[in-house]
Amino acid sequence: MRFCFIKDLSMRAILTGLTIAAALLVLCACGSGTEEPGEQGMGQEEAGTENSAAGITITQHPAYEAENEPEEEINCWGDSITEGYGSDGLTYPEVLEELTGIPARNLGVGGESSREILARSLIYGSQKEDILVIQMGDNGGWKDLDELIRQYRLMIERAGTDRYIIISSTDDPDDFEQIWGYTTKPVGMESTWYEEKYEEAFGEHLFNGRKYLILHGLEINGLRMTEADHLRAQKGNISLQLRNPWIDNTHLNEAGYIALAHGIYEKGKELGYW
Image (tube, rainbow, N blue to C red; front, side, top):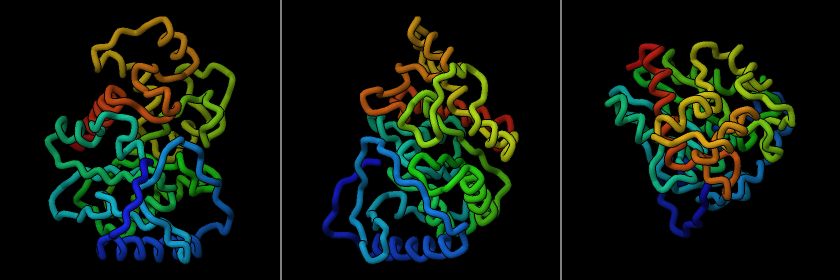
């Protein structure tokens, strides 16, 4: 969710932004008519300029420049977590491509709401030959989790593929800044209320990123679990060795993104995608 303001937008970026604006208007017209929650303070900046008339942000961004190829690809949709904010440049789609040998598109745009990510996916076209990996919702764009789940389902339906992986939030459950609502009760390896909703909605297609990183994230990176890590795991929190804690309790560091990619890879193997 890192923003650098750009004076000279390419015509392609402008047209893409306007097309997304139209898609957002359609989504608003077809939606529940409820107000969406405000964007959560993630301590990050966005990369773009705002079109005040349309009420959207037109962004010159690599994810907007991506074209859907006819060959099989892994399309990784999301916000700054997919984009790789907090890392030193390495992203989970990069690692996933190395693990699978299948081209992986990083379609993450920092700061985007779930509604904006959905709108981008709708104009991307058919993805029937592709595998979708989706994580969204941390920046609002939904009134309740049922609405967010409907957005996921519409995204998958319009893509035209039955090969997809949904990543649940990597937020710490006791982080009072997270959009899902926090708890002071130690969660450990129990599912949070929102993880339970995801499990019910997506079944075997759900990859629980929080639990996987707690159980396997350190080992994958050759890191030793400390007493502090053990105490965090009892609370249901991811090790700070996999985060940049001076940023927030949502984003990961390079080691965290590497572990996330390995977990997605294992889930894809389980589903027979590669």
